[in-house]
Length: 281
Image (cartoon, rainbow, N blue to C red; front, side):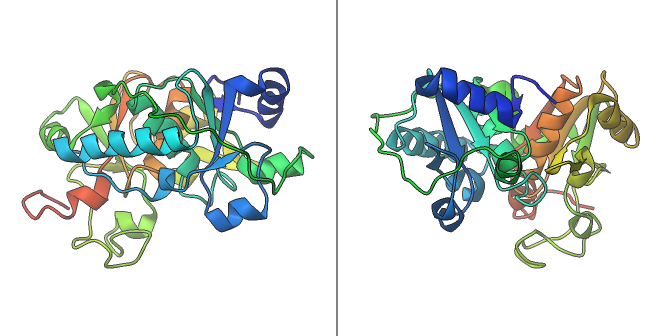
């Protein structure tokens, strides 16, 4: 699968060979995994996965400020193409895709995900290193927020009464049926359940086994999966998960299948479940 936002390993290698100054690789894995080996020149930014955000004004301002600062410290320029990767697509809860989504929100559309992740990169015989790049920080990574890609808690609440909007839950089955509140523990959040009226496709179903690890399904396969929840190319969809990582994986897959009118509720269950005034099923 080759799109501007989903890059195959050979495509990333070609960019590194031809335009090394114009591309930045962001490793979203743990610092320990990064130090054990990573793509040449890659910079480690674990907060892509771990940072929790609310979608009220203060929460989104903090989100923008946080990543402007972090990317600046890593020496990332807004003129560069940013490629995110994780270990493999089906075991990191969509963390590389969360990086791609955050860049869309921060106004940096020139971002992509390494299809198949670090594991696929290695199995295709491409180089890795334990060397840490010398970074020259910049004062701030320029942010121009794109509110069109962000669904807030208030907007999600209004969407409950909009029959034209499909709410799609992509969490693991234990969360969907209310046995667990999160991937971090059964009682990590104060309430279990789901947003009223939501439909469900577990995020794993957007992927399939590839020769060297899990990859996204092709367009026709994705459209077939989406049809099980009554979603087609004309649908208006809001996706959520626990904190916007698995939902980012699903969002990127859906975009690649030609579903244009799809957005994400970034605060997801972590935010929704903590407000006792909000309805749940």
